[in-house]
Image (cartoon, rainbow, N blue to C red; front, side, top):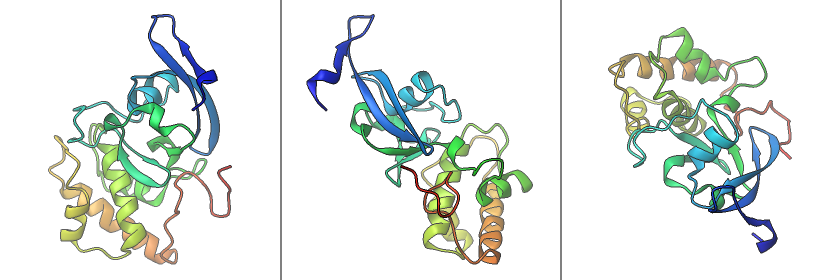
Length: 187
């Protein structure tokens, strides 16, 4: 980050210009230096699918990927994502087609209020990318870092199991970069 990009915002607090790729689109936006990544995504980029929950990394509502790795964005300063490729829950779909995990959650009632959904979706996508046929215990272990107050987890496990079946029928391929159709370049 060069000093040229640092400024003082209208509130007198230091800010900077971040350059990121969000859901396959290049974005350049001003951001307070002390903003969390979840705040940057929700308040600056206006992507409201990522939720602010506990702000301690316990609930998973703020989950997204940064450079292909799952992160709880309430634990990361936005400035540390400068130059990164970010995928939010809005970016899991490919155009109008839901990601197979999203579709399975829809078809099998894997969510109720939807607040915990980002964490469960990203945990499922990550699990299925490395294990096409997980057991229920493996599914439960994969989602253990996400809290849900509505469902009791049974429908979530059922949804992930169903997604695994759909993905297996499609040749076992889980898109490495959610939001991008196979063969699409994010840059």
